[in-house]
Image (cartoon, rainbow, N blue to C red; front, top):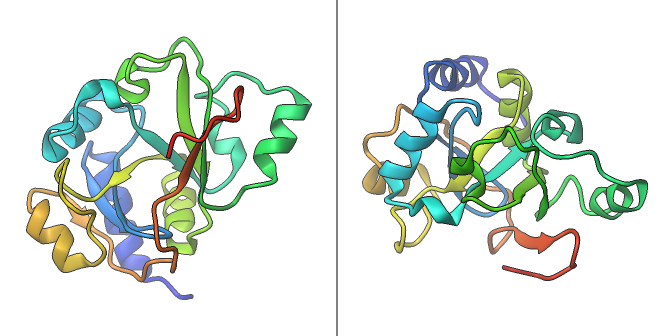
Length: 184
């Protein structure tokens, strides 16, 4: 799959400027921002009309990009998580104390995933870290599955990275790594 270098540069520039962007993922378009930027996170939550207590997901190109956000994992837990990555499983993992409650929804865990979508992974690599990833929609409406639906629901986004979805039929499964409970 080839990507437009210019489009990836534009998306990264918007992220570096505290912007909120949309991009294709495995099943739907996601909206994202820099997880270190509270300004961008607040903007993303406001655009989606998403309640703060719901928390957010981070996607990454590889596990190393997530290590500043989560507590160190036991070898057993790391092996369990790595069996599903890259792929459509989001894990709730123990979060570092310094991480904003805007990301966690005030919980002691953070939802994280190593994406299998080539464009989302390349965006994360080029940006140099993980991205906040939430469905591209206003809370309560159907998630966008193409660029036109993104623009219709979220016209105030700073950039929309075009591309094909990954072919999955539903959003990622969310599992609690400590209890193995499936939450979605």
